[in-house]
Length: 173
Image 1 (tube, one colour):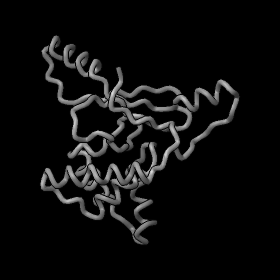
Image 2 (image 1 turned 180 degrees about the vertical axis):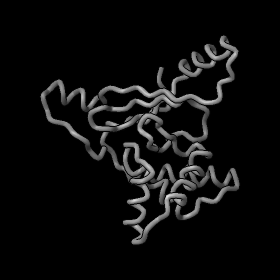
Image 3 (image 1 turned 30 degrees about the vertical axis):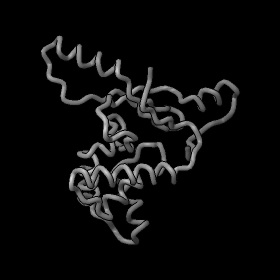
Image 4 (image 1 turned 135 degrees about the vertical axis):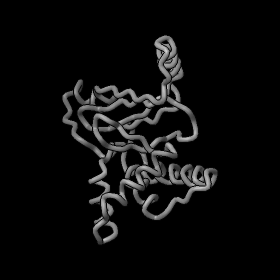
């Protein structure tokens, strides 16, 4: 059974996603006595603007447009590091890009379903996957520190479009 999923292919109001994610981030920062500064909040919001991973240089460019001035790469990377440490975002290694975490307060597997057609990403958590990886690690006397699984394929919308012959490219899902 899959749980704690964020399904990227379903059209919805991103402003609701962003506001809910920001509310969770603020609570988590308060609990950890950490400050969600303007740069951190702006980076977080850019990462949550869609369900597609975004790279650090894209974030830097978009911040420069928003602020009307150049933003130094270390500033962006410090904000990303802060958000990563609190598990508010995840890095998708194969894409060298970042995605917002819909459930930062819970221990979960980093299982990403990446659509090769439209670029959307859904993060899933599955207890069975966590157990399997932990059991395999213990059997090998390996201390598992973290995990990230990336699955590539087609999201339901792109699968449907392919089956009906409809053209589908990147959308703002």
